[in-house]
Length: 243
Image 1 (tube, rainbow, N blue to C red):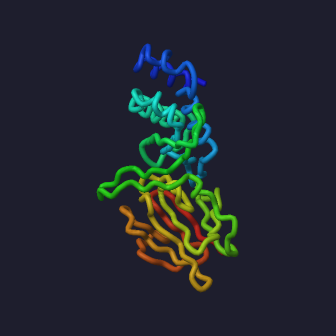
Image 2 (cartoon, helix red, strand yellow):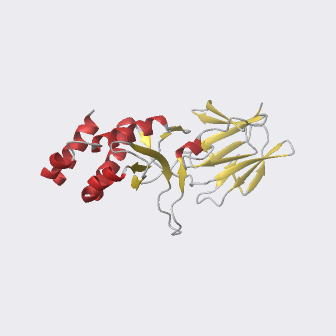
Image 3 (cartoon, rainbow, N blue to C red):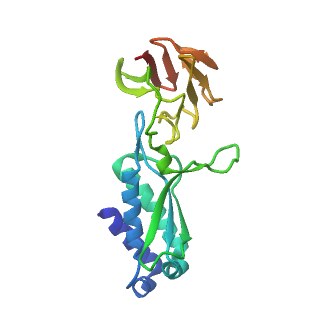
């Protein structure tokens, strides 16, 4: 694979002769890069217009391997983050924030063994709040869901192209990959709006988004959805339908 070959070439260039001497045995750096690419593929989330993948990875190594990597850890982290960026770009996947790779040690792991946990790391915000880190597995839909009697349908070129069942009592709409309905529109906020089920009705609320939420071209703070209502977020249009 071109990405992996380029990763090894760059890493060898950074640490030169140390590479061949230190990594003749045990865990190889390319194994970490390959695992990251596999986890990106396995944990992708289908959004309205884009496929999102984890941008953060926690790599847990054995004490022996962590010690061997200690003198190149910063360079290795930087090159692995580049693999995340290149892997997403090559496949047309979206990232919720800049790539981040962390290393940890687990005393129970033997030399050559390692774990890789994909996470979603929200990019820096203007409010200065700390990034939000969520296990990628949390994006999987719940196995048990209440009865569905409403849906939002993505409208493209005047026609419905994709349906999003309102299968939970609270459905989050936003740019973050862990949203129930991911909107990759640049005008969408990370947590833009939500739809709540109340007494058999569906209530749409704007969550203090930067660019606001419209229903039938009117800006709203909160609105009880009726059949055929069209929600506008930036240039994205979602139509509410009863089922």
